[in-house]
Length: 138
Image (cartoon, rainbow, N blue to C red; front, top):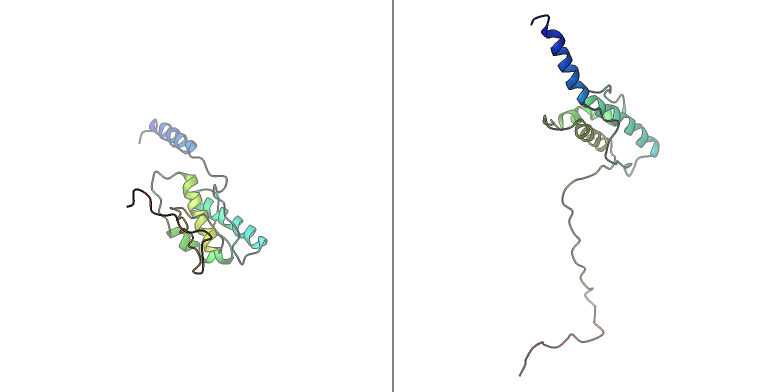
């Protein structure tokens, strides 16, 4: 590499790096698990935010203690992410996996199923008779 091309390559790298925006937090909502206190939720939320930031190349770290630390290796191998994925999407995936592994409620994406139509009880008796046949009957 010539001495003249070094500043050009450095400038190009800085330009590309400037286009990447680090997420400031998750864009999804997580709720405390059924058997979790608010204090546990707040601690796990903080740990999972740090973990997710570390996964996208920010200044985060693996959680230091608790269930999130035990599950951090499972979280890091759970999703490989493609080159087209945004930093926010990758952050959200890591955050959701970490919060779920810590026992909290996280969003689930996919089709929702409608409840089946209600059936009347077996002892149901209508108050009026059903309508008669329609059309020309002889």
